[in-house]
Length: 272
Image (spheres, rainbow, N blue to C red):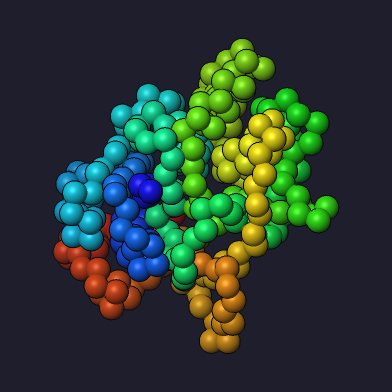
């Protein structure tokens, strides 16, 4: 199955760890597509060329897709909203029926069962539930396990299906008589967790399409703050709620990730 990774300038190096760890626990995919947010205000002049050079060392023939090639993405200034819009329209730049998707700040600790939908706690906000109910036109928002609401936005990795995205947008646009991206312009400067592409997609699959999600709980561990007494169990992953600058250059070098002095100086100034 193709691997699709979404990244931005602040995760330039962390994305290497994502790809490395995925390849460690999974068969080599027939395609690796890296979607880079070249609309970010953190982009430097040689960013696209540097992405090609760095990621092709891991996967010869890696394909780079730019968010600037997606017309809908241009409408959004907030990187938080834009990366969610990119996922909702990902089928327009990824020419596959299905693919495994992950954000570029994940480190896998084992293989992933494609039949499962991972979730974590804590519970999403009521604003987020209202967002889902409004967009989908349903009386109930959110995903539940044993009558307890869970979070399917974290971990941000799962199988994605082209037809689901097409049907989701059609469903939303039929209800609201507006395009999905235009509806999200109401949230274009939103920095809270009101908008969630994963909660929206999985709620659509469960409540509208009637699909079984096969939910499985995962434990997130912070890559930038690993406790000494960390206890592992089956379903787990490392993540980072910050940028490359949260780590030292030595940290990346120890993982075989080498960059020039100039690029490291750029990365060390990206804090979000």
